[in-house]
Image 1 (cartoon, rainbow, N blue to C red):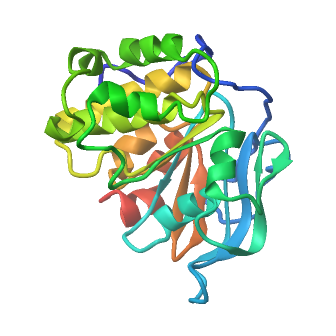
Image 2: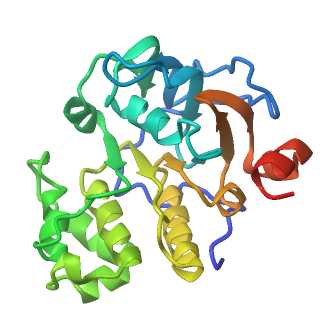
Length: 272
């Protein structure tokens, strides 16, 4: 990849409301409780499932701080996307809490969480295919009452291909370009945190590398990024912290480098 994750710093905070900071002390290679009291975004000890169904998450904890990329990896059916949706308020927690910038938002609806500063990009159906690229981005500013033209210009700087295709119907774009539209639309809300569910699903390795480079660029603005990803090895390479989930519970936690170097993680989840 042309990006790389060393020496990332908060260089440009113009597309984010980021405030607050905290230190995090991971316990690599364990599923033990973590010190998340100061984390900017934390889903803490989450247990729950959909409706009246069985629990999918079991005492699951995730967190991320400004300028970081945190990735959630694990086998199919491990509860990765469910954990992301729990943080966004799309399922009821029977135990645990979600906090954003020091505020307990456990009982807020997804819509209210967007107002509080959450940007969420689902894996599927994440753009309006019949609208142009620019109309999609403008839809992302629906909660704003100020002039968002500066933010739009910043999105075009971040994703130059979108500026070139701004008058084109979003449904005519490639898979990777659609994902850029979806991320750009979420950034139009000026989020405090950005959550991405399988952003590279179904794209080629070349496009995956490009998307990861753009994700790194977003993190450089200071926005914390929490990401579910099937391409575990590549995701951990750009991760400041990683969570390996198994059956809805934390199996391994640490920095991306720690997890890539962990022989148990490599053998069980990274193909040796």
